[in-house]
Length: 231
Image (cartoon, one colour):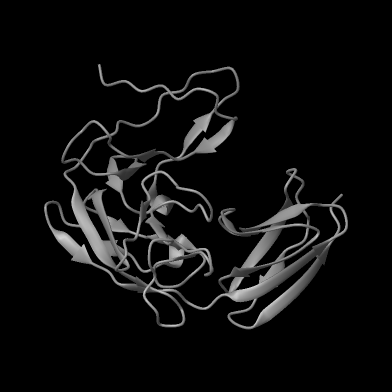
C-alpha cells in the first residue's frame, strides 16, 4: 500500500532521505514538506516522540537525472578507485546513495531527483568536503539535476589542514562540524593526525561517545594541534 515504517528512532527531529531501489527511473530526494529537494537544509523535520508513532510527510517521487564528472586530488593527479561521491556525509565507509570513482577518476550518480544537489566527496588521503571545497553543505556549490538529462561537475579536492589531536583519556576522536554536527574527520589512538578541510568550527567526540565541551577553529590552510581531556 506504499506505506513505510521506520522503527527504533531516538526521540527528536529527523530528516528523511528517500533513495529508490524498487522504482526504476525515479530519483532520490530529501523529503520536503510538499515535494522533494536536493538540499538537506530544506528537508522537512519529523519530530519522533518516545513510545509513539508519528506520521511523516508524503514522499512524492520525481523522475531521475544524472550527475557525472572527474575527481582530481589536491596535487592535480586524477583520483582513482578510492574516492567516493554521495549526498550524505560519511568520511569512512559507503554511505547510502554513494558511488566509487572508476580507474579514470570518473563518477556517475544516475539516481538523483531533479533538484539542486550538494555533493560530498571523500578520499583516504584527502580531507572530506562538499562540492565547492567547503565543510558545510549549506554553503556548498550545488549541481542542478534535470530529469532525463546529464549534468557535468568535475571536482578537485581542496588541500586539507593537518590536524593533530592529543588526548589523555580517549583511544580515538571524531571531529564534528560545530554547526551541522556531521563528522568531518576521524583519528585513532591517543595522538592522531588527520586531514580536515577548513575553515570551520569543530567539536570533538571521543570514540566512546563522550563530547568535549569546547569549540575549536580550523583555519583554511596549514596545520593545527589540539590537546583534549574528556570528562
